[in-house]
Image 1 (tube, rainbow, N blue to C red):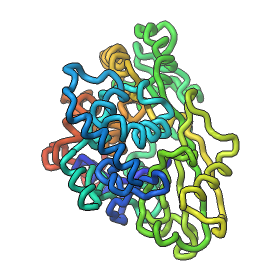
Image 2: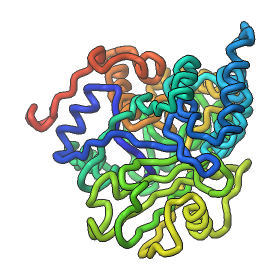
Image 3: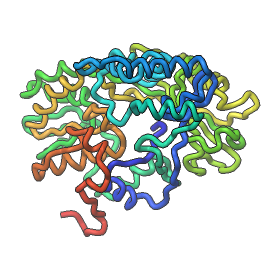
Image 4: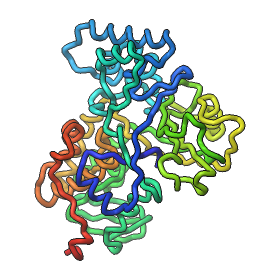
Amino acid sequence: MGGHVIFSHYKYFDNLLDSAVSEWSEHQRESWVLKADKWVPYPFQNNIHRLPEDLMLKCLNGLVHVKQQQQPADKPKSFQQWIDRNFGPGLAEVFLNPYNYKVWAYRPEKMSAHWMGERVPTVDLPKIIHNTLKQKDDVGWGPNATFRFPVHGGTGGIWQAVADQLPKENMRIGTDVANIDVDKKRITLTTGEVIPYDYLISTVALDLLLQAIAPGSSVADLQPLSSQFVYSSTHIVGLGLKGTPPPHLKTMCWMYFPDDNSCFYRATVFSNYSKLNVPKPDEQWSLMFEISESPDKKVPDDLIKATIEGALKSFLITPEDEIVSTYHHRLERGYPTPFIGRDELLEKIQPRLQALGVWSRGRFGGWKYEVGNQDHSLMQGVEAVDAALFGVEEQTYFYPDLVNSRPKSQTTRAYKNPAAAGPAK
């Protein structure tokens, strides 16, 4: 749920999705930041020439100041320190601090500095100065500069199609786990069914997995650590509108909103991803909004009303637009926060579980946002199977920088369609 799009670091992932989904829409990313009522192309720091002059100078002076300072020898201890050292006070104040608080629902000083990698574009000062002097837009950065989206069924349709390739008799859908005996290797469902296993790959949120471990187990001492995990919740709000998008939104994909005149941090012109994302193509269009929540950041009581008010202030809709449908869904776990102390906590837990044949992987199972996209999460499962059965070292979970930086041509795992291989043995 949310504004997910498909881009990939893995040929295996691409081949799997090609085997499952027959029709895709291909898109060039067009993403923008609305700051001080000015549309700035993403990445923001490469396009500060679009800002009002006072904000542009504040950002540029901060960047120059950073380059003139001798960098500390020690690594930054928090995301805030990383921002300050790399971008300076101007960009931190104008964009990075307010935007990251709206996304994560925690201040950057509460987050670690080890997760960014390709998630946050760094600074090329000569290029920024050149762009500013030439008034030139620079929009090509990032792994999702191009992306694709299914014509039918949205993001959920992808994974339903993948699931359709698997044997139905091996699935239990809509059933909860009552407890897991990690020593005897048995899962008890709330239906009373007991499932033995040799290896367990769990995508349950890691804090909930610890809580589900049967009392008296050999890793019972890990259970109190579940309270140390930090995450934020995500609200998804949708607006369905009559007509077609206004001219400035006709080719936009998604937009970022650092200012406090809107409750949402991101909006997506969802009908631009596929014309079938609305019931009546060419007669309707739609917007999707994401709003974060945490103990440090509350949300308005009437979130749909607040979203509409923010959309009006952000030039996404006008008072004359006819809203024909609204949608609101709250995801308790939206983002696995890269909190300070996260890596040390994972190092206490994961080796102990893995020694008992339990691989906790996936967006919340692994709790590494830097490898928490759809392609990463899928490959964490693939590599966990290879590790369990063949002793192959996992790359995605343990070497995020490696998998996020290498070309797809260097990935070695090949996907073979199980349907073409005959019945599974």
